Image 1: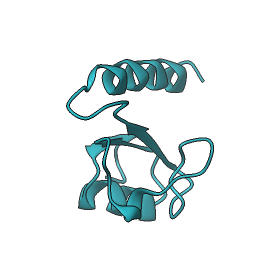
Image 2: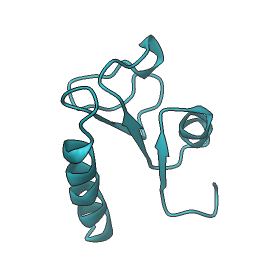
Image 3: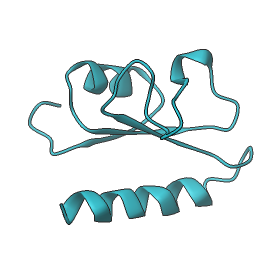
Length: 79
């Protein structure tokens, strides 16, 4: 994880580990997530300020998640 530019993961241990290591992380989350992925008004994880949570807009629909992830990666690569 430390050798990666950033981490893309589902909302699991990998996302938590990357967050605790301070690595820029995109956590892909389902619409009815658990309490651990609470977030502030910028969709950043409460526990890890370097974890961006990208959540489904509705159960079973991942299109918005992939579109937002694509935009986030483009932005990251251009900075």
